[in-house]
Image 1: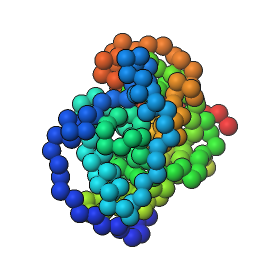
Image 2: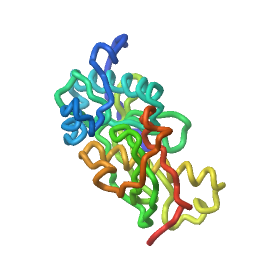
Image 3: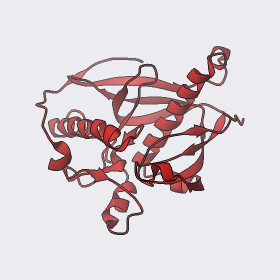
Image 4: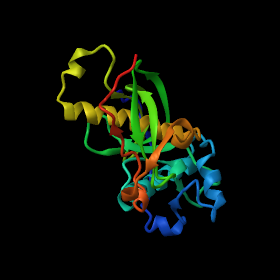
Length: 231
């Protein structure tokens, strides 16, 4: 992780943001609320981290996202997954697992700058398509550039998710470590796709319904299919 400069922001923590901003999961196939589908299929707006209003938006959204992960039992989340009245469209923000630490982080304006060459088939769920699973093909490794939200502002970071193609030491790691690293790589690709309104219902093939997650709306429970690699 490369940390360079930090842009400082000062912020007073608000209360009850879920209620204040009318936050709800953006379910794409809810016929009663067509505006949610529009939200899911909107290209997220880039954040101006030097603008105090945008900085406050990110801080609020990060608080909302953290609460959503616990409330809906999601593994990660993008702005496109949560509808609120704070903005008229999603903004380019995701909350995903840290690639090395056991914590979630908020990334602003994330971009994937490099991929591995192997392809992995996985079964993915999504909070915007609750109760449905899709087989999706993604890459084994992703390099991500973004600004990391910190307690005092934003720091530019370069992150590596997954296992590199040519590093034998990665393939020699314990199976549980490999699976976590691969799952995190698939997860970050899933969330960044959302920001460009690319969803698993279009990218993947319908696998079936999962009654266990229908009500919980579990996001990013990615089941590896024997970890198959395709060159």
